[in-house]
Structures are given as C-alpha cells and as structure tokens.
Image (tube, rainbow over the protein chains, first blue to last red):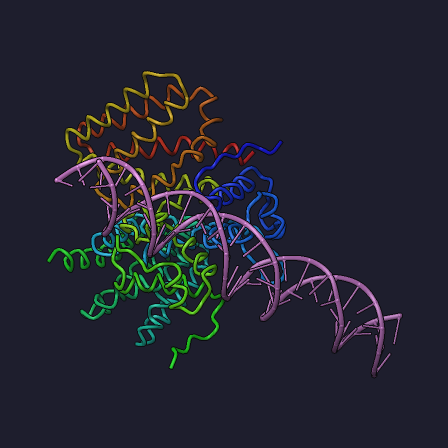
Amino acid sequence: MDEAAPQKGTVTQRAIEEIKAMIAEGRLEPGQRLPTERELAARLGISRSSMREAIRALTVMGVLEARHGSGIYVTALEAGDLLETFGVVADLSRGPRLVELLEVRRILESTATALAAARITDDRLAAVEKHLAAMNATDDPEEVLAHDLAFHREIASAAGNETMAAILDGLSSRTFRARVWRGYQEEGAFARTRREHAAIHRALAAHDPEAARAAAAAHVGEVEEWLRTQLGG
Amino acid sequence: MDEAAPQKGTVTQRAIEEIKAMIAEGRLEPGQRLPTERELAARLGISRSSMREAIRALTVMGVLEARHGSGIYVTALEAGDLLETFGVVADLSRGPRLVELLEVRRILESTATALAAARITDDRLAAVEKHLAAMNATDDPEEVLAHDLAFHREIASAAGNETMAAILDGLSSRTFRARVWRGYQEEGAFARTRREHAAIHRALAAHDPEAARAAAAAHVGEVEEWLRTQLGG
DNA sequence: CCAGCCGAGTGGTCCGACCACTATGCGTCC
DNA sequence: GGACGCATAGTGGTCGGACCACTCGGCTGG
C-alpha cells in the first residue's frame, strides 16, 4: 500500500516540505547532490512541473542550488545562503516599515560594532581603513556607496557572528541604501557621514567597545531620524 | 520594436525580477490583483510554466498570494508577510549557526523587552500575565511551549516595532525551539525558566527598561550558554 | 425578490517534447 | 604514452497544450 499522504494544500507545497524535512532530518547533507528532477517527481508521485516549482522555491530561499546540466545540490546552508532573500524585504518595504528596518539595523549594527572593537585583528582593521580611505577619496556616489557597504560589512564580519553579518548585509542591500541615501546625501550629509565613519574607526582602533557602540548607533540613528521626519511630515 | 531584454540567467529569474520591480516601482500596489498567469507569461514572452515558477517563488517569499480560482494578489507587504520564510533559516541551521542565531535573538529580544517596558499598556500587560499564568499552570510541554512563544510575542509586539517582532517570531519558530529546548528543559531548567519569566514580567510591570533588558538578555543567554557547552564538548 | 444553479474564468496539475549545458569517456593525434 | 578534442549520454531549462478544481457573478426559475 502507498503511504497515506492526504491532500494537504497544494502538491507543490507538500514537495517543498518533504525536501525541507529531508534536510532537517539529515537525510540530505549540505553540498550533497539530490536525485534528478524526474526521479524526485516520480518518487513523490507528482509531475515534474510541480516538482520543479518546489525546487525553484527552495532555490530562491537559498536552500538548494541548481546547476544546469549537472544536477541539483544542497547549498552549504551557511548564513549567507539562507539570508540572501532578506534583501528583498528591505527592497520592498516602504514608509513606516523602512524606519522599523533601520531601527533593527541600528540595534544590530551597534552591537556588532562593539563586538568588533573588542575582537578585531590588525589586518582586518587595515581592511576597514582601506575602505574608509577609498570612500573619502572619491566623489562618485556609486563608489562611495560600494565602499560604505564594504566598510560596514568588514566590521560586521569582524564581530565574529556570520549570521548577524548576513542579516546586516540584507538590511543594507544596495537598492535599499540607494533609495534612502539618495535623499539623505543630497542634504549635504557627506561631511557628517565622514565624521561618523571616522569616529567608528577610531573606536575600533582603540578597541573601545562602548565608544564603538555609541558611534555606530549614532551613525545609523542619524539616517533613521532623518527618514522619520521625511515621513512624519 | 521589442525591448532588448538580453539573456540574463534563466527566464524564470528574469520574470521574478520583473515582478519585483513592478512592485518596487509602485506599478503594483499591496493587495492589488495581478493579470492572469497566462497573460503575464504572454506579456513577458515566456511560457506559462516558467511564469508559474516565478510566481511560486514570490509566493513562498510572501510577496504574492495565489487564490485558487480567483487570481494572484500582492500581499499587504507587512513585515509578517515578508519575514515568514525567516523561520526556515532557524529550522535548517545547525551547530555553531544555532548559537549565532540565539545571539542575534538575545540582542533583539533584550532591546525589544526594554522598549516594551517603557511603552506597554495595561491591557497588553494583562495579556502577558495571562500567558505567564497559563504557562505555569500546566506541565504539558506542548502547551508550555505555546504560551512561552505567545508570552514573548506579546512583549515583542508591545515594543512597537512590527518588523522586529516578525524577525523574533522567525527566530523562535516552533520547530527551532522544540529542537533546542527539548534538551534544555530535560536538565530541569523549568524552575529557572519560570524565575526568569517572572523577572521579565516584574520589570515590565514596573516600567523599568534597564531591568527588562537585563532580564531578557539573561533569559536568552542561559539557553545560549547551555547550547554553547553542548557543542563545545 | 430571493435562492439556487450554472458557466466563464482562474489557478493547479499533468504530460510529452525539445533545447542548452555539463561531464565523461573514448578515440585520435602529436 | 600522454594530452587533446570530440561524440554522447544525462541533466536541468523551456515550451505548449490539455485537463482538473475552484471561485464568482450573473442568470434563471420559483
């Protein structure tokens, strides 16, 4: 007799849960290759189309990775893989939701910066300085933004919590910052931003967690406050 | 002439980006209904199958919602909608990743509890007390867990940041806590947990943010530390 | 006027074919 | 003998069409 798998939502949904369960229960290890789409479909008694939708869903979630011509593989399941979609949240949020997102970022970023101040090594600090210098050396907004992101990413990474770093990465997604900062920078906030970045770097170099926390919180808080007034009218 | 949309990854990926862009640019409002799958496919010059995969991907991300027989709609794009997938991260993370996740939760939960202490209203406080009492009134682990979750959710909600509450919700997903707490509670941590919950409630009732922050941090920190020793050998 | 039916329209599922790419192994050429 | 290159089988990617399950609004009959 067949297993009694009653109609529980759509077939595709069932397939998604099935594969997730396989991974959660350890039947599928990170990096391991899955059976072919055709076989998976047959095994669950569904069509290849439905199975493909399930695979696609898990792919965008960063759980699976499909390599054309080769096969389907479980990702490393690292923080970065699974939190990639987090950027979508930042990209699609609007209005009050943006302020909330910045508040979350302020909380995490300040803590991450504090941790980084205590733990950062000399060569990592050098990398931070490199981005700081590059950021101040150009006027091209694109390049400034890129080094700004790298600056904070380096710090978050130095905090020693990859998960937190990945979340912060999502919260600072390129399009998110571009949307918010466009207006912010237009108000001549360049100088202020540079001062704040310098303060953060100073605290890191001094290995002073409290100063780092304060500097980072103020840095994000400035943007947050500006955005709040933009919306509050 | 047609728009020149060069081959950029898979067609499905292009469709996903396309729809995301429609929403980001405001061409699609929250709650609004999309054209039919068949028309969307025709409009982008791809097959319905591929379009369906794109829609399914956006559905699991909480961006779209498909109602059988009715149509496809944009969700409200509230924090809860978009962060639903966050639970998957908690469910699939293992080893050191779990500790990192708990660390993030400690940071956010302590801040959220502190904010709640300052802002919580009397009736919300009553709701918190209700879950606290219910949690202490039973020995059924399932029920304890349910009220435990509700207890923290209520507090997070009282903090006034829905986004943060939604993230915390994901970090405390049912299966996640079940996995970690099973072992933790077996070590007779019931009493300690109750004491910690009582402390959190006391701080909330007294509207004392600092005490609330400390109590919440200690509460999560206990579990975090226990898990760390479990892994560290 | 209302209740019930019914049909058009929509998403959900399935099938089968073909395309694009990868990896492997065999044969050829140096 | 070894390195290169090409044929080939196998994989995911795409397509089109068919049918099913469900919803909803309008029509019909009371």
